[in-house]
Length: 197
Image 1: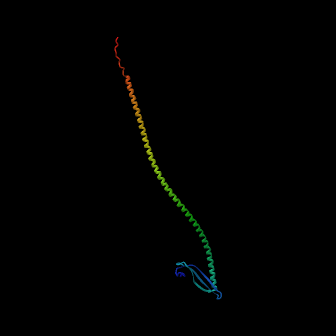
Image 2: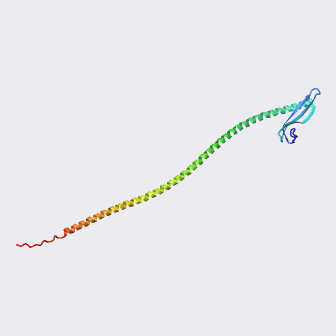
Image 3: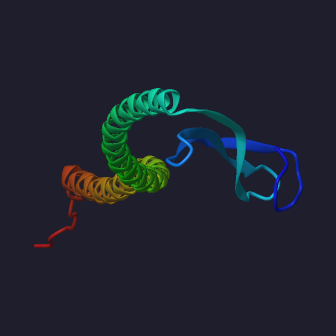
């Protein structure tokens, strides 16, 4: 169907309906089928009568009954569709709630991931510090052992000097005593002299 606005021949049928017109004077009737189109090109909507038939009143009344029956069916379908739409709206609302919940969960996960990365970085830093402290402790223990050895050596050296002094004094004392003994052990010189009488 050609668009009445832009002239494009690409239009979609939106809705179709029939109209019955009864002419009371002549006793005749006519039925026209009208279609509502929407242009794909410019989006305009327009109507067009696609069929027009003339008939007698009896035929028109049969058509009216048929249209009423179709209308009742369409009304029932409309109610059913309304219920489905309502159910879909409920589902949509639930889905929107679920989406908000998921967004909130995603935000929480993002926060937790950031915290985890921070904790991981702190852990790495602490592990580095602990490794450095362990190394320093090992160095200090080694230094302490070396210092203890040096101290023991110094103490032993001091003791050795002390003992050497004592031994030296004892040797001098021994020497002195030996000399005294030697002096005591020697006989006294004889005194010789003549007395005249």
